[in-house]
Length: 316
Image (cartoon, rainbow, N blue to C red):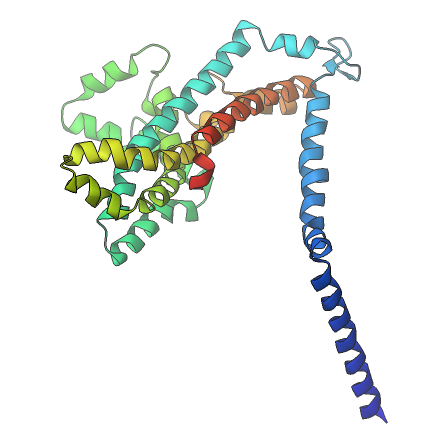
């Protein structure tokens, strides 16, 4: 009796699953909608909802007398963005993001080119491990390691002293705006740490784009009498450029919003991420923090539009 009941239950379950499967087979759109329901719900409510709340907060203002947020629509908070100090912060952050992106591109391209064209299978695996190995460790550990490396008593300071180049180091640190007491307390240190941390995000997309370049096109270019330099400039570089642009999306955006590296390294000059953290956490000025956050969002929207026109998303 028990065996018969168990058999009937299993048969009913199989029959139900079969009917459900048949239903979704005949209604593929509904099946797709069901699969996308939870991700779209997360994207719509949690992600886009948070951005909408952030944008709404930016149109409020902080009462200077009570310190309370006045929940009335106003553009006063956005007017504060156009002060000299805030504009300097935006320009400084954008300039650092651009410099880091260019440096990562110059360093990543030769590595990616060798990986795609000359490295053996075993060498490619070794390169992959070498490129991604820093990502396996803690972000904070890597940043603080650079603080020790760039300090006066660090390896780089010892190198300049050992080879009698202390005067050169002092001249580098004496440069206004970007200099400082040591490399770890200057824009140089911030720049070096940014390049080190984000470089893998440039290498991988560039390598992927270079690997997609057909060898037949290179052979055809050589058959037509083109010199290696001409082949590189007119064939390889244009085809790999979308990959470089795709990598620049990561390096530029990550630098634009980072607040840890400028806080650990660098001088007292603020970046956008630090201002947001200070206004939201220390000052409690959430409307101004939200308004400042809108700035990198606008910059990245423009950047992504240009990157899309350059074919970057096809290289991702």
